[in-house]
Image (cartoon, rainbow, N blue to C red; front, side):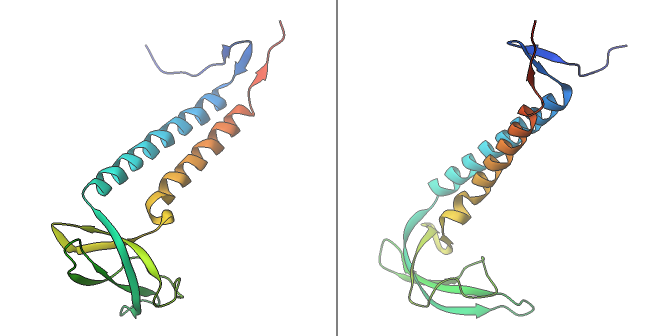
Length: 147
């Protein structure tokens, strides 16, 4: 009967116990998810155009205690559009009149979003940090074997 069992492994005179192997596998899985999120961001960006927009007001949506920025921007042809961004907060993050980056779909400019480093790359950066934490935790259980 074949079954999977983890056992101590040695690599370059270092003992790598099962807990380390598990933590490193989790780290590897998180890295694969991170790579997937990066690829999806690039595909998302390939379908979008970027321009500057201006925060013109804040809107509180019914049933929420959050406010959402209302942004005006112009597409490449100069036509003006307004939209309410989907990322709200309990307090204004920007002063009305602040210029922000806007990504929009050139085929349908009404599909737009305010872009910040955090919203674009935050999940990937978070996953990278999490993967490194699991890698370092796993590394703490390895030790050099003296022959």
